[in-house]
Amino acid sequence: MEYVNLEKLNARVSRLGFGCMRLPVTQEGKIDEPRAAAMFDTAIKAGVNYFDTAYFYHNHTSEEFVGRALKAYPRESFYLATKLPLAVINTLEDAVRIFNGQFETMQVEYFDFYLLHCVNAQRWKMVLENGIIDYLLEQQKAGRIRHLGFSSHDSYEVFEQVLTYRDWDFCQIQ
Image 1 (cartoon, helix red, strand yellow):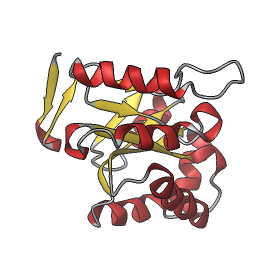
Image 2: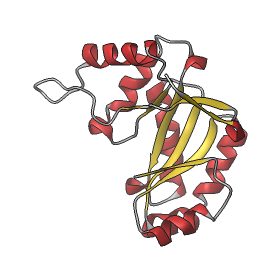
Image 3: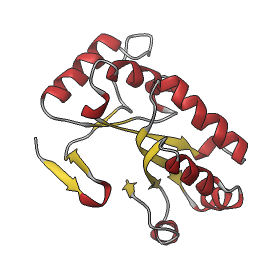
């Protein structure tokens, strides 16, 4: 496996990450847990150490499965990324409730990489108006988030506006 040393973040991340948006499913449409767990095992044995999930993936079941599946491995052996689902957030209280729920669901003490998910112009305005970044920075300071970033799904102009708002740890772009 090839790795990239993210010196600013003190992280050595596999160039190939494992996205959990399209895990194998059963005929009923649920995650095929034995097959997905075997895929995780194969990936980890091959050196993959970055696992990316999100609140919406697999009809809100991906985070729970990923949390359970990764318990089979030492926590320091992988990086876990998930996202704050801006599409269903209208207030800071919404963000706090969902963020805390993600910890319960995934049964972890911290997220290595935490993203504002699917930022666009409208959602960015809502994030700023509700103090969501300040809240997430508090969570980062408390050690619940190691690296804070965003994923962008809008025009270059909006991307640049978000990118230059602060010194982000990282971003994922489509």
